[in-house]
Structures are given as C-alpha cells and as structure tokens.
Image (tube, rainbow, N blue to C red; front, side):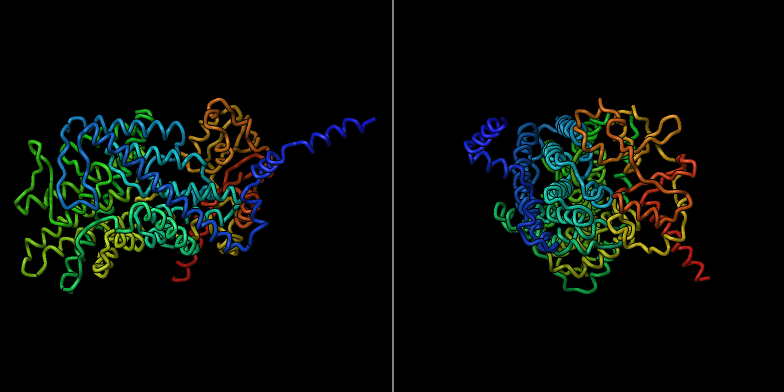
Length: 634
C-alpha cells in the first residue's frame, strides 16, 4: 500500500537536476569540512591560512587605497581645492587650501559620516583600530563580528579623506584581524590557534599597507605586550605579510613609501645628538599618549551624543588646520618635504610662509608637533575611525627637524654634512617618538627603515629608540596591551599551578559586580559589557541568580534587534560556578573546561557573593609571587 508514494519520491529524486544537487553540496560545505581531505598537521594548516590572510590583506589594501584616493579627491580637492603633498612627490610645495574657512565644515562632515557608520553598525570599530585588534587577541578569544572590517574601512575612509588627522595602520590592523577571525570561523578553529591567526592578520594588514613586511610581521608579535613578544606569531606573520606585500606591490610598486634622500652615519661624535633626540622623543611620546587619552576621556564624559562626537572632533581639527594644514589627513608628504630641507610652516595671504630666523623656525616646528598631536586627539579621540601610527610618525618628524635645526645653529662646525644630518633626524625622530608611544620599539625601528629605505642610520636610530622607549615608562598609546604573556588569557595554561592551588577564591573575587534583570534590553547589556570591560554579567531577580549573559551571546544577535530583545531570551540558564573556599586552580580549570572568562561565586546556600575573572586570577598570582619574592629577600 505504501509502495506508491515511496516509488513516486524515488522517481522525483532520479529526475532531479544533478547540477542543482551538486551546487547544494558545495554551498553546504564549509572550509572546516574540507580539512579532512587535506593534510591535517596544525603547522601546515596555519601556513595555508596565513597565505590566505596575506592574499586578503593585499587585495583589501588595494581597495582601501583606491577608495581613499577617490574620497580624498571629492572632499579635499573638490570642496577645498587642496590636496596634501604625497610622500613620493614631496620635493615641491603644493598650493595652500583656497577656501580655509570651509575646513571645519568639511572635516566635521567626514567625522559625522564616520560616526554614523561606527555607532549605527559596529561600535567596536571606533577609535584607532589597533586597540580593538589587540583586545580581540587577549579578551575576545580571537572573535570579531564579520561586519567590523567593512565598517572600519568605510568609516576610516570618511575620516581620513575629509582631512581628519589619522592614519591607515589602525584600520588595516583591525581589518586584517577581522579577516583572520572570519577565516578561523570558516576553518572551525578555536582556542590559541584562532588567536594566533588574529595576530597574523594584524601584522599582515600593517606590513602590506606600509610596504614593510618585516616590520609589520614583528609589529604583530610585539604590539600585543608592553614587555614581551608573541613569538609563535612571527613565522606565520612573515608568510602572510610577504604575500600581502607582493600583491599590493604589484599594484602600487615596490618602492618605499617615502621618497627621501639617503642618510648615513659616519661621525661617532654625533651619537650625543641622537641621544638627546631619544630623550626628547621619549618625553614627547608620553605626552602624546597622555594627551590623546585625556581628550578621549573628555569626549566620553561629555553630554554630546556618541554619533555626533566625531563631527565635533572634526570641527575642532578643522579649526587647527586653518592655521596649520599640515595636520590634515595622513601627512606623510610633509615628512618628505622636511627631509629635503623645506619647512612650509603656515600660509599668509594665500601663500606659504617660510621663516628665515632659525629660532622662529624651531619654535614653529615644535608648535606643529603639538598641533598634530592635538588634531589627532580631536579626530580619533572623539570616536572617528583612523590610526595613530602615521600621526605619531609625523609628530616625531617635526620634533626631529626642530632639534636638527637647533644643533645645526649651535654647533655648525661639529656637523660636516647638514643635509644628511637633517634627513637622519627627521627619520629617526619619527621612529623614536612612536616607538616610545607604542611600546613596540623593534618593530617600529625596522618598519620605518623599510618605509624610508634609511638603513644607513640604523645604528644611531637604535640608540635613540632605546632611550625613548626606556624614558616613556609604562605609558602606551595602546591601552589594550598587557604587560607580558602571563598576563594574557591566551597563555593562561602557562601559570604556575602550585601557586594557584594555595590561594582561595574568596581572596581574589570581586565582591562588587554589575548585574542585570531578565527584562533588561540587550543594547544596555552590550554597553555595560563594553564599558566595564567584562565578558559576562550575572542575571538576577529578587536576589536569586537565574543565569548569565555573555558578550559573545549578545554579539550573535543582529544589531537591529538589540533594542527589542531582552536578556531573558538569550541568557544561559545552565552555568558553572565556584565556592569561596575553592582554590584559584579549581576556578582556572572550570574556566578552561567551559571556555569562559568569568565565574559566579556562590556560598553554601546558593547565593551569589561575588564573581571572579581571568584577570583576577592573574592579579592574585602576581601579587603572591611578588610577596614571596620580597619575603625571600628579607
């Protein structure tokens, strides 16, 4: 009786279009499913994925460059009849802006577009991007939303093309990290290998856009920490950065980014001058980071809506640019001009003013250094999307040029070749200031040498960079950096287990912690998670713990539904916990077993008395080790 329908279904299957069936299988196949047909050794997998990341970085850099050029032609050339000098054609002066009074409006418009893109579609893309990429490695288990790279690129184009004081390295770092995160999801990678690919993406993006594959790869390993390296990332970053550089260079040429005269070091006595330069850059690097975050904090605490803050920052940047148009955009062309002895300070009556007095020239170069830092803080600190690497280099170049002119005026007989000395100070000043501010001295040193072709001054540059790095102390422009590998969740398994077994949870837990109700909107939860730097929040009602909601759970919800959905719809009702009497090692094992960064602490009666995070474990471990070390000394 049942043979009829069954035979009909079989007949239908036979007559089904074979191409449609084949396409359905291909469409359902994920990259992770293909791994069983390939070599499965982990190092081979990382190498293959690094090559893919390099290809993506090269292609994205080309798209980014073309989009940025077209948008710059619209904003600056079309609206202001002005284009900043190019780094490869910076040996001749460009015409000043013909309508300077429009600068605040144009830069403010770019900030407004950037703010709308960022805060409406991907709030995690605000700011300079490199911090978000570092946080993705340390805090977010290598996970980033798929839309973030595209939003970051478009928002950065709006910021930079309209004249905002920002660079390309931060956006490319986050874009590279986002591409690596997406690729890891397709390959079904989790844990440390996913984080490792994110670091590779950072290096590939930066090394490609700056045509500095060696420096970019080392930057990925060095920028994650203040005093350490992610050594496992270096070799795959070499591969990805080289592939990206090869593709981008085929489009844009393989010449260095800057076209500057070659400098050389031949007189040992000049090391004293380079030492002074390193000290000055170290102090200025501290000022750069502190000024940036002071202004960022002022914007964050203001009553201006978030989406409008980048527009306000753009207006303030435009006001600075009325007097000093050097602060507009990336500004690399001005570095090339200074390396050739041209110092257009500001413009009077529609033409550039070139000061003839050495004292006034030095003073105005120092003013330009501060103006660039101020404009960058207004632009990026207000929430616009853009990098802080390029502004840091230009500020250092201004400082280096000011000191070079000072030494040439005071000690003319000790410097036989003033032109070479000036070029060297401009280049070394650029790398020293940002090496101090970024806590990545080796990578910045090599990257700047690759960008300028200035390997002839690497010896004095090492002295200047080392002094700048040491004098900058613990201040960094990248707030998401951690001190060293033991302070990162990526290396939590490397902690000393015997130490953690001796410390009870009650001594390290947080007794004051945020909590939400089941009817709390998800957009409020996302804001609190981002503000409080937490991975999850307990869900409570009437004093009872009902579950928890994590950052990853919220990110899976479409952005358009965050306002309407409530915590109770997505919260985790089954969760693990620890007791106050449990050891930190017990808490660590449960965090690793359940892949969480935070646990609730319940008493014997089942009431929540606190929470404990991975960072609490690190802090308790470090305090114990420090205490034991002091006791041994006594």
